[in-house]
Every structure is written in structure tokens, then in C-alpha cells.
Image 1 (tube, rainbow, N blue to C red):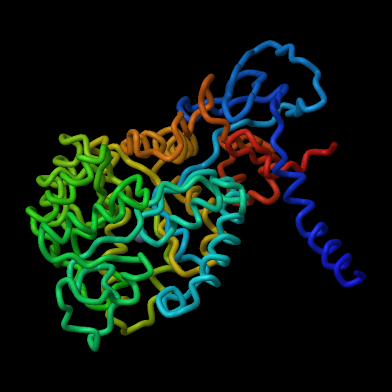
Image 2 (image 1 turned 120 degrees about the vertical axis):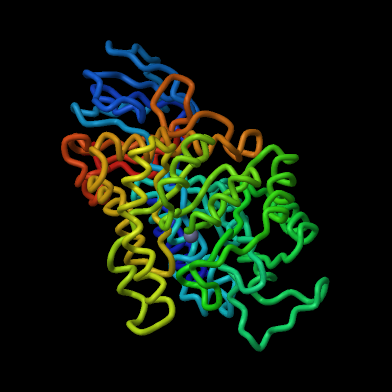
Length: 447
Ligand SMILES: [Zn+2]
């Protein structure tokens, strides 16, 4: 009995803070806030925002009269900035805290619990939505959506679909040859990536992800830096194979995004009907013009230098990184020059320390953009990319903006991030309130 009550006390002690923070008020009223709405480059005047359930119900420049029910939470913003929750459209929720070996060969339960803890940290960094572009995140997403663990909204792709030897094929050479229709490799059993070598196989793999709830499909159209066997210059899927994926996703009401660096890989993907290019770091002027003219999305990342240096000197991966990194700045310059629809993501992999820099990586966009442009990109613009999922969006409603009727994902910032974007580098200090889906997950304002 005694032991049992200790267990209960411990359980309550652990659960209490989260329960207290996640209790869902029917109504929250933000008073005296200045709004960055995810669209305009400046703050509003003093404003009042009423959230009911999981939606923003009313925005007003004059005080909003509300029923003073006991479950109405009134937040005195004190002139602080209210902004939409941040969005990262290139995230791998299952591949942050583990090592590559742990992700493939480690215990699945452990990996999921570690990913859950990282998801909570992600939310508490102010990222209320992520687009997961590869990894078995369906279970994590379900646990978050059910309130079992605190985390961001996840737009899952499921397994990255690759060709034999392509980016995302992390098999050992000893696992070859593959028999089509034969046993799956470990990484495929886990749902991390899926190998497909014909249009028919691509269709099967795409449909398997859609069946599990993928909101979009991710293929690798060319070689990658971190994969052991794919040269950077290689174009991998044929146009016919890419078109099979686009058709299967389109029939399901959604779209395909591809990992691609080179002009050839990008152009082939666009010809096949792909709607979004990840990275694009080796593109040229002709390709940039094509992306712009076709209205295709570009999803580059301001990858930090320490990531390049993380690949051991003299390794194949380091040589590939050295080839790709100079293209990052050029890609952003081309994206600006040709007014390409550009999204923001980080592509943090296998590093909890780097994940903690998620806001700092966003702030580093000021190399090419004003703080207001960077913040619009990571909120309202990113949400437009997410909306390509159409009815396959797991979260019907508007994200990334503060407007009446939109989903209530909100950050209260102690200061003006448009004047000082460095505020988002220290979310623990400067994001004094974090709300997702109308629920307050953090509130450090004095009571
Ligand atoms: Zn990635």
C-alpha cells in the first residue's frame, strides 16, 4: 500500500505540470497584444484576440467583452507580440535524437519514446507544426494528436521512397541482391524508407504511405550527401517512375515532393508533375526560371556550417557536403531573383543539439531576407505549402496566420521579433506563452 502510494505520488508529481498546462480552456482572451499575423511585415496596434475551442474567434482593436466564466482564461499581454506558431516544413521527427545505427537497428519502443520527448521540445521551441519528410512518424503523430504526448502537428510523409542505391537506401552491400516481392530490409520494415525500382513498385510504395495517413509523398529524385551509395550528380527515378508517384498521390488528392540537387533531377521531377523541390542547392538559372514559371515550391534550408563539418574530413559524405554547401547561398539568391515560392525548413538529422538551434537556424535567414520576410516564410507562407495536401491535411483549418476562423496556434513573444529576430533563438526565455490547437502548453507570465 505504502509503495503504491509512493508510485502514485511520483506519477502525480510527474504528470501535474503537463496536466496543468494542457488543460483545455473553452475560451482564452488575449488582451493588449500587438499582432504579427503571419502575412504583413509589421505589427498591429494594441489588439484583443478571443480564442474559443481550437479556433481564433475574434480579433479586435477594442476590448472584447467576454463572459467571465471560471473557465475563461484571460491573458494580459502587456503589449507583447502575439504571432502564429512557427512551422518547419523539412523535419524528421523520428531521426533527431537517435544515431543512424540506433534508428535502423535499435529498439523501436525506445526510438518512439525518444522521438516523443523531442516532439515536446519542438513544441516548446514554438514550432507548432512540422512537415515530416521521411521517417516512421505515424505513431508519434497519433500519440500527439490524442494528447498522450505534447508535440507539434505533424504532416507525415511516412517512408522516403528511393531507388536501389539512391538517397535513403541505407542497406549494407551484404543485403544485396534484393528479390522483388521478397523479404523487406530492416529500414523498410520500420517504415523509414522504401525501395522501388519500377513504376509499379513506386505505385505500391506510394499507396502504402497513403494508406497509413501520409499527407504528402516524398521521393528522392537524385543523390544525397549523407547516403553512402548515391553520387550527388545522379538522377535516380526515371520520369515515368516519378509520374507514377505523382499520379497515385494525385488520385488521393495530394502531392509529391522530391529531394533533388541538380538541374537534371529538378527538371525531370517538374516534368513529371512534382509540386515541391527539397534543397535544390545545385540548381542553375534555367532551372530557377523553370521552377518559378511552373509555380513549383522550393523548400531549401539554411543548413548550418557545423553540419558540413560534422561529416568526417576525408569521407565520401564530406566531399559531397563540400560540393553542395556553396550552393545554399546561390539557391537563396536565385529564389529571390526569380520570386520562387520559397518555404522554410531545417532538415536537422541525428542531433539533439542542432535541433535546439531550430529557431536560430530560422533567424539565420536574415543573410537573405528581412526579419519580417523570414517570419512570414516560417508561418503564413509555409502554411500555404502545407495546404497542397488538400483534404489529406490531418488538420482541417487555416494554419500559420492570425485571423478570425484560423486554428489557434499562437506564441506570445516578450518583445518585437520583427525588430529583433534573435528573440526566436531563445524560445525558453522569450516565448512566454505557447498555444497549440487552443490549448496552452506553456505560460510563464506572472500570475
Ligand atoms: Zn531531409
